[in-house]
Every structure is written in structure tokens, then in C-alpha cells.
Length: 151
Ligand SMILES: [Cu+2]
Image (cartoon, rainbow, N blue to C red; front, side, top):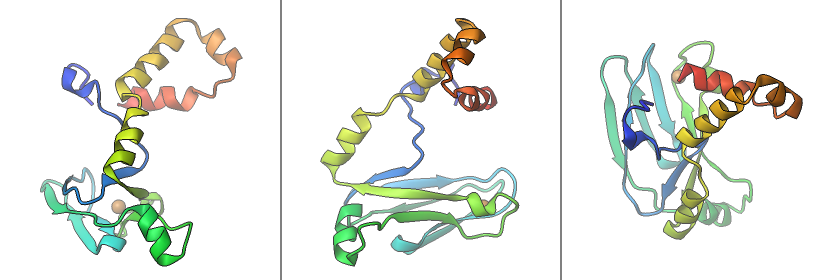
């Protein structure tokens, strides 16, 4: 993210894809290295991610995750995103959960999210207040710090 652009400061970086039932969504796909395939099997959607050629598609989820759990009788049901291209050593790890909410549930979830800019700022404060404190607190924030350096 480009922190010089103030429009990025309320961006969130969730570890799941959160969608709203009956709300069309546009996915814009890019690849840096090799071909990947953005596969949402429960939605019958698959789109290649091609280096140098952005791809895109619209879709509209019509059932929430909870509705699917009731319909399938599977309380553990989750929508899944997976890479459907044998793209390299990290291929096995290219998956993500997709959650489809009602609009009310989505708004509640969104309000609970902290902008990534603030998450990074909190890490920078911890660094500037002295590493001894961060180390003695045992917060396990080392991974977060290294991630923020890469971005
Ligand atoms: Cu991939």
C-alpha cells in the first residue's frame, strides 16, 4: 500500500474475503510471477491470473455462509478460494476462506476492523519506544514487524 496516498489509510487487510449476499462484486486479478487460477468452486467461478495482463470478473453471491450451513447440514461449511494452477512451491498454501454475510452482519464486521495503517503505526510506536520493552512484553510481534517492512 502507498501510505503517501491518504485514501489508503482506512484500507483493511483481512485474512478472509468478506462479501455481502446479493451485492455484486468485481474481482480484479493480477499476477507478478507465473500463471495462477482464481477458483471459487462453490460459486462455479474460475479465472486465470496472468502476469502482465490484468483480468476481472463480476459475480453476485446469493446465499450467506450461514444459509449454506443450514442447506448442506454441515455446520463446518465454508466457501473456499483456491489456486487451481500448479504455480510453484507455494501453491499448496494458496487458499483463503470466503465469508458471505447479510448486509447487517457485514457492516458489524467492518466496524470491528482496524485500518492496516493503524496496525502498522502501532508496530512503529512499539519499535520507537525501545526494543527491550517489545521483547520483554513477549507479544510475539516480530512476524508483524517483518511483514510491515516488506510492504
Ligand atoms: Cu497460484
